[in-house]
Length: 138
Length: 77
Image 1: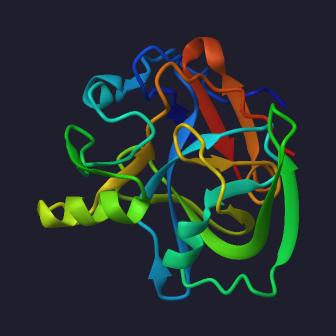
Image 2: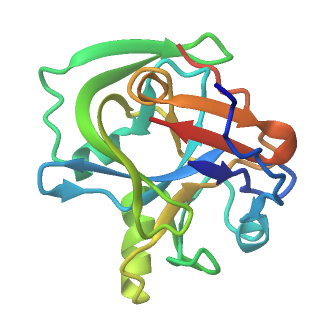
């Protein structure tokens, strides 16, 4: 399925964003705009998303990560259902089970990331940056 | 076997920057379901979604604004 790049903010270049919904049992999130980021090892969400999904992270595996400052941040890993929406935002394009990271110090411009484990690992993803398009195939 | 896949066509990027131009830096923003209006803002997803609900938007889409002049170099491991 082909998606179009989005210019999300003033004075920023177009980027590959997808709209996603997370689910844990009966609990679901609102639709979230997520950056498709091949540089991230896991998909990462702020902790409040885990709270919304009533995820019990007490015994969850820990994962430490760092961005460009090299400063370590701690996250917890948990498996959830991740629905990727079509561009009409009405229908699901894909739905998958994914291990994602939840972090209370995560403050990314845009909000959330879709990374290697649990997202890219499920698909063949091709970026046509010059055409403002990207393709996700299962 | 010949490659029968259709070539990918160029597209204009989808543009949220006009809708978001006056949104507070660093805030979570709730957009209307058609992404044409800001229907809530807050320091958390919950706060922005709650304001959207109060304004009658049952299906908001949430995004976090960058800080003033903030770009992205987002590799994390």
